[in-house]
Length: 463
Image 1 (cartoon, rainbow, N blue to C red):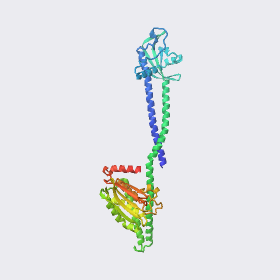
Image 2: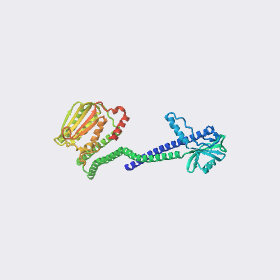
Image 3: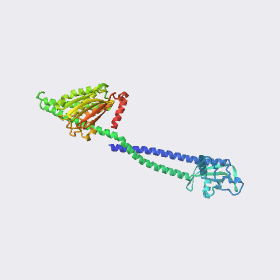
Image 4: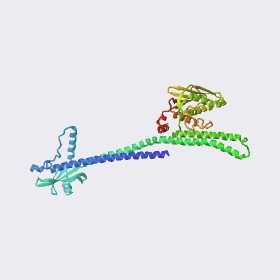
């Protein structure tokens, strides 16, 4: 599924980039073509204005009073001044060198400058072309020209003919070659950038899908693990209920073992559902913390009293080394956090071992720690112990569903703190879990619910 999605995203990115590049190329080419055409027309209009004013004696050699017409040196280059003016003057002079003048007497070609620009047949065909007063495209022997007709204000004697009209023709060969070269460059560049955009699209698609893929995999793993955890107690309950139906005459006392089993599995299901509900509320940002000043030492002693019978039953020594540690927190959540850590520590510590509950202050934090002398956690499992449903024992013969540490991590982070786990612990054996909470409480709660949701989403996606 993700492969097809990635392919669609790559195609989408490539299409978007290619469209932008195509649009950019079209705009550049159209703008350049427009500027080139505007310069060509401006050059022709300037030459036409000179003709109409009868100022260009070089263009009209008959004004010299007979004799051979001198070779035409077209245009009047302005005085070069600063560098910018000199460059513009050179550009104007170069453009005017592309002009060809055909002097007409009626429809007869009297002269052309530069001499030899056209053959007699080509010049005669141009004279009959019917060019107007506005430049338009004509083609002479495969060479593109812009042509226009200029009516002189008074006839000019050239040789034995009176010239009354001049055809101006602008040779566009170099400009057309330049535009074709520009089009080739833009096309090749667009192709190269399209290939590059495909590579960039692949990278961007991979980065965009990474958190989605991770979230999807987590969701799938969550559903599989939740199904596994729910299936076991439900199967046991179904067997016990079938057993009761097979012996309808027995009393509750006779079926006390079955009833006790149902009670245990019901409690297990209730605990699992409550844990899932707590995590779901945490993910949605709906869990509410009732903050007030609390002493972690008092909560540590309360947790020890709750689990003392369980520790005594397992033959585990339970010690409390709690110093005063004030913090602004939700006492019920912190007690739940203590309970999760102490319950795990006792459960995975063999008889004769010990569990130590500690609270103290360190800098600006209130610290609580639970240490045990149990079997510890292999190093390869440490990075994942806070994942939901993750259990070090792959056979799932251990107690619980693997949600306790996930809830403990959420409680710590909801209070603006952090939780860390070490194995072996500070005693050189077993496991140690340390939780650091800010004394002044979580800062995010002062920013409002929307800000907390944003922070939680960012933390979830970046983890």
